[in-house]
Amino acid sequence: MIDRHRFEPARLLLGIGLLLVAVAHLERALGDDESLPLPVLLALPGVVLLVAAAVAVGTLMVRHSRRRRRDAEAPAETAPEPEFVSQTR
Image (cartoon, rainbow, N blue to C red; front, side):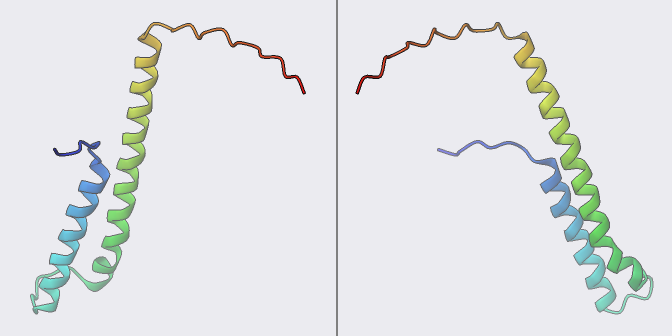
């Protein structure tokens, strides 16, 4: 059986972005004259990381707010009274 896991949009975006950066570098290596300039190519991985981090923070904020809303709507369960046990030595 397949284990279910949470969807992570930041990981998806990071993977697609880094694949596109690799394709851009490959184009430049193969001698395409219309490719991006080298400084732009060197800055792209950092930009992709920053965008993925922003998406990760946004995802985290949405998940926390949904969890907080769900917990507020759920009826509060009363905790059982703790039993006090006397400790004798």
